Image (cartoon, rainbow, N blue to C red):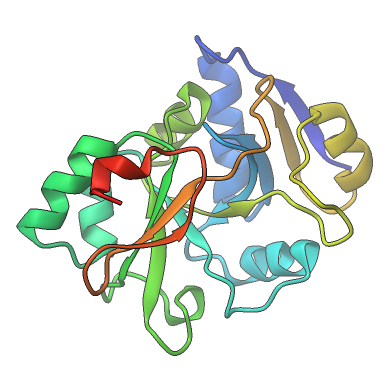
Length: 206
């Protein structure tokens, strides 16, 4: 049975953030708010929890999972970023963007795209997500909470709890997130728009 935390969107309660981080550290899969949609998340190094997320979404490892990072310094540990890319990323983060970048050796093989050895990374503009990431001290392996039978992401935390109470360990109610996904930009070879979403693509000259 999933736990359910109502966390204040502007001033997240430290006690609940610590409890949520402990659930992740202990192998839990959580639902948490971001600046675009609700997301499923788990520890980067937890194979069983990752497989649980893939099962919930009914996706395979060819689907890009995302490393949700607390800041750009963390992003640089897990992705190969040159100086020019770093300046672009700095101008756009935190924000509703997912960047496809070459993965470093710090990223487990099972979380990368199997052929391209890339990973999706992002720094969310959401106080709950950032507080949780700061408490964890490492990225959350994540993907948008959109169930295979649905046409758009789930937005109501109570509906999320009803539908996933036996599949996840925690649902965080962080209020309304919306249904518009991130803008996805592939930076592995130039700058290519993969999906137009909430983030302003003109920041990248697209």
